[in-house]
Image 1 (cartoon, rainbow, N blue to C red):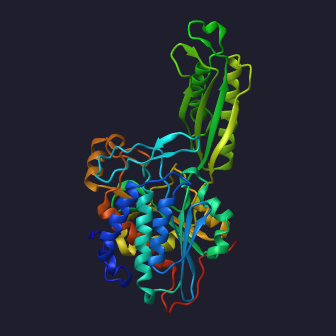
Image 2 (cartoon, rainbow, N blue to C red):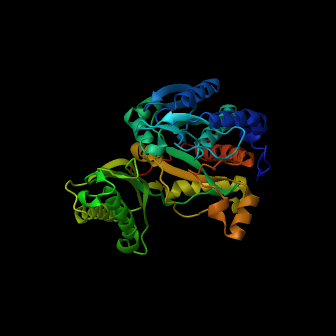
Image 3 (cartoon, one colour):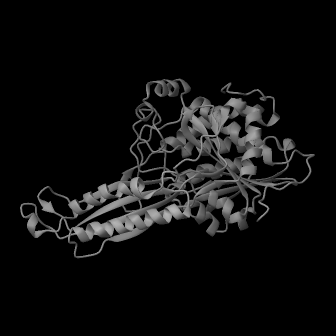
Length: 437
């Protein structure tokens, strides 16, 4: 087990971490080798359910599709919800690890794709199971109720809502606090947490642009959707640069452009997939209006005989950390890891649907990042100005957290955070719920 900032390692709850580490590492590697796409996490759900049953939790499976919920009541006290997501991505792994994934799956469009845990959700599962093992093994150290939520389809932005719609809180009770964490490409041993809006809202769009097909040698008889789509891609780059104020934040990315099958055939249509990130309703409305205007205008400028189709694919709300919950949780994390290890890196333009669990239940939310990168490699890349090249980020085919000390740090962080909200057996009642709930 890592020696990272274990100045309070005598805490009884954490005392068994070295003992359970080998099992957690093996479980992590197993999950990494066997990733599954969103809403298809059947094997993963089975592994999680078995582990929860072994730890003595009351287990409910199939929540929101493939979600798994474990409940462990241990006397009077707050109901603390600990969340991990467990879906993977359609990415071909290029880490070179001996436990790398060679798995494949079928995506929502029916395509056969490679599958990889390119966002670290396998690490989230292993860390939460480790924390639950430690907490379940030390019932004399806390009182209250643990609710462990293992969520599907975070990558689609719909897994949390699916669990809520399927009666999550009727099955597991309404929590007082929601705690979650995400491994990130920052030095292992670092914890980062930001109060207020901490992850952006997302809108994902499919845009179909229609032309008129023809032979590649006779472009004058066609309305070329490839040119139409290419012009649209370039024009969309002006949305943030020219329509969003310098003090506001937005991101517009065209992640896919698909058209045609052969070099000498002008196709009938082209498809774009567009991803938008914003923090406020006003900026979101501005960007969505601009994207719609530009798509339609470029089609008209190309002489399209059919209007484009714009379809919403996915949507994540802004994730907002409750400031009081952040203060209470990070105080406990600093007491454990040390002042220098817990930082505020500000809001991120990534998105997360964990906040839905808090919003839907009226609970407070505290969500943080924990580092998964070799500190020496990070420092070298930072010094050389090669972060983008040398430090793989989430969703990269080369992304894989450094197991030691990342796994131990993630287990400690979730355990310490949970204990900050659970009662010591002699503690008076308290609530983490928002006063407006």
